[in-house]
Structures are given as C-alpha cells and as structure tokens.
Amino acid sequence: MAETTRTPWLERHQVALYLAAILIGLGLGLAVPGSGSLELAIEPVLGLLLFATFLSVPFRRVGESLRDAGFLCALGVLNFVLVPLVVYALSRFVADDNALLLGMLLVLLTPCVDYVIVFTRLAGGAASKLLAAAPLLMLAQMLLLPLYLLLFLGSDAAPLIDAAPFIRAFVLLILLPLSAAALVQTLVRRFPLMRAIESGLLTAMVPLMIATLMVVVASQVRGVGAQFGALARVVPLYIAFAVVLVALGILVARMTRLDPASSRALTFSGVTRNSLVVLPLALALPPALALAPLVVVTQTLVELVVMVALVRILPRLLPQR
Image 1: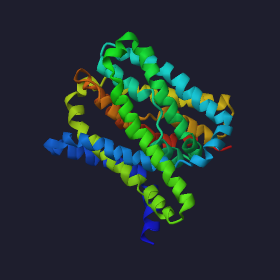
Image 2: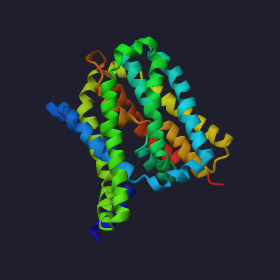
Image 3: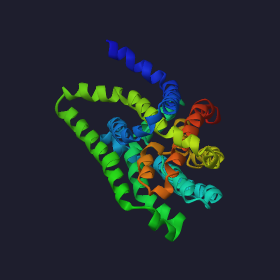
Image 4: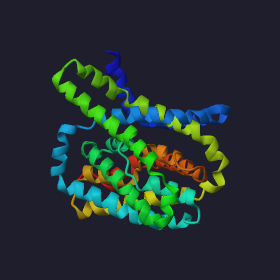
C-alpha cells in the first residue's frame, strides 16, 4: 500500500525533485573538497538509470512505432537533418577553442532518450511515441555522431578522439542496459513473479534520475566554477539552440500535420539533448580537452531550466484542437 501511494507522488513532483537534486549537488560540490571523486560514480548510476529507462520502452511495440511513418519521419528530419545544421551554425562562435567546440558538438548532436519522456508527459505530449522510438533514436545517434564530428571538425577530429572510449561507453551505457531491459521484459512474459521486480525497477526511475543529477553536478561544479569565464561563452548558444529548435519543431510538426500531442513530443525531442549519456564520452577525452565535460554539464543546467519553462509554454503554443 505504501508503494502505491509513494510512486504517484514521485511522478507528480519529479521536476521539483530534479531541481532540488541539482541544488543539493551544487551545495555538496562546493562544500565538500573531495567531491570531484564522485566522477567515478557517474557511469554506474547512469547505467542503472538507462536500464530503468529502457525497461519502460515497450520493445514489443517498437514495430508499431515504425508504422507511424509521419511521426518517425518528422523525428528523423528534425534531429538528424535540421539540428546538425543549427549546431554547425552555432558552433562557429566557439570554433577557435577545441574543448568548447567538441563539448558543444557532443551534447547538441545527440537527442535525449530519458528525461525528455518525463517532460513530454508533463506537457501533455505523446510520451508513448517517444518511448517506442527511443531505441531507434539511440541507435541512429550512435551511428551518426562520429560522422557528424568528422564532418564538422574535418581532419582535426582524428587526433582529438580515440574510438576506444566511445565503444566502451556504447557497450556499458547503451548495449548492456538495453539488452538487460529486453531480457527482463522477456522473463516477465514467461514468469509472472518477475512482474514485481519490473515494477520495482520502474518505480526507481525517479530516484535514479535524482541520484544521477546529484552525482554529476556535485562532481563537476567546482570545475564549472573555476572555468566560468570560458563556459559563459556557450550559455547564450545553448539558449539560442533551444529557442530555434522550439520554432523548428513547431514548423516541422505543422508541415507533417501531426496532432498537438505528437507535435509537443516532437518539439521536446528536438530541444532536449542526451547530455547525461555523452558525459562519459567527454570525460574520456585527452587532458588537453578537459573543459569539454564541463561544457556538457553546463548544457544540462541550462536545459533543465528551459524544460521547466517549456512545460508551461509549449501547451499554449500547441493547444489541443
């Protein structure tokens, strides 16, 4: 009985809890001298979060999502055609600094697959469509990201990026959680007793997101503060990205004649980036690019504020007919 009352409360207040987690992470990071060592906990807690996220993906219905051609086409055009064009234009403002440039490219070229679903649901969007499309979005971005980096950075990309950390991050943070989630869903269908385990893991999504945000912010806040002057250059670019993508999301939704709920989901997908997933990739970069992870974390902080605002604004821009 206690669990059934607790879960709805967590879901209703999750945005406030996420903001509180960021504030607590800021306090811990600034107050505790050794908080930077929490960086070692990022991958484990993020892997658990992605496992819980993928567990909520209805894998049996992925085939159904493929039949929603209009939404998938709009999702692909927005995230993998229009977003790269916007990112390339904005990245020219930091093209003189490899760390700022690479960090910005890593985070802005990858669409979110986790808390975007939360904010989409809060705004009355078609969160189920994003859930079903999550595996496709993840696969597409992992295949296309190296191509985009080579295209945008040219021959300079090769010495900057070692493929090994990218492959390791893909296996640990994508392939293993995704496979484990698919296995659990298969076992649930065969063994009804597994349903309680699945339900408990799904309930843990909000606490895991809270833990992830706290660990990331606490481990990186001192670095962000120490490099605030350099990082300030990307903040207006992140804000500009969000504003432009809201406009493009609405435009693409209207051109493809999506319903309001699908239009909101599409727009949130365009605005929200995969910062928590690419952070381990940024952390694996050479010491000369040590600022890149902080560039990624800065985007997370800016984006969460934007998401809270969009929960209120987007339903007015895309009202139910």
